Amino acid sequence: MRIVVVSSPRSENHWIECLLSTIYGLTRLGGEEKPDATTPGVFRDWARGGGFPDNSLFHLHCRYRPKIADAIEATPALILTMVRNPYDAFVSRYFWTQQRMPPDREKAEARPRQRMVGKPLDDPDVLAFLADPHGFGSHLNTADAWLQSGRALVVRYEDLHRDPVAALTRATGAIEPVHRDRTDAAIEAFTAENLRQQTGWKARSIRVAKVGDSTQRLAEAHLAIFRDQYADLIRSLGYEVR
Figure 1 (cartoon, rainbow, N blue to C red):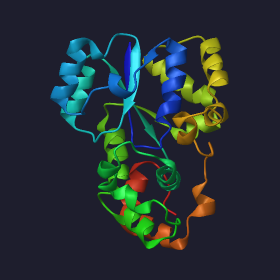
Figure 2 (cartoon, rainbow, N blue to C red):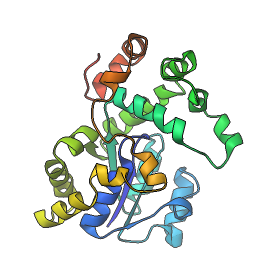
Figure 3 (cartoon, rainbow, N blue to C red):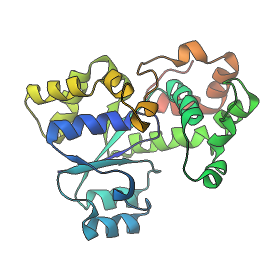
Figure 4 (cartoon, one colour):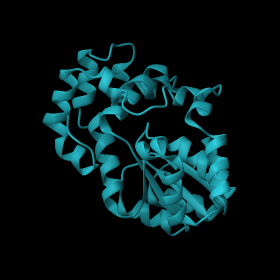
């Protein structure tokens, strides 16, 4: 069994990776173990060269393209995508950017999200990132493309928080059914709160471990941008426009 979790950042990619690796006894690949790039050719060469052994999984962030989906499925591997409420995802992305310490500062500075570093949530530069088609717009388009592709098993962030047993039962039913005890053990070992209390980057990647944080943090200026620029995407992702 091989699984690739392909989602936009801040969608609980790490959490679902931990849960599924525990349920199925899979090895999680990370860092330099993963492919150097997300082009179809690089992925195929990496997999053919033994980089993606059986009984392993990993997550990556890349735009949906039929050829990269073809390359993943040809390994063979199952594709899973996490989908999260766009409003909560933006708030999480903002705070994650504040805490993130990229090793390559020069490369990081060229990324649109870096304009938010050190700025309050309602700063014009933060609003500009939200409105930027190459900033947060890219985040939403990537999430929607994988969701609508029909190539990925979909797990919603909110379902995983609200009822992890039901969410994982649906997911494992589509992957390979397992006994309830294995699901329960994984949930107990990797609650969002347990992950948040870990040291190192794993702790930094999970800030508040809850749903709906955006309702307390976003102002009308943020909501207006969501309505004006992303209403169709929000609905396509399965959420209500605020």
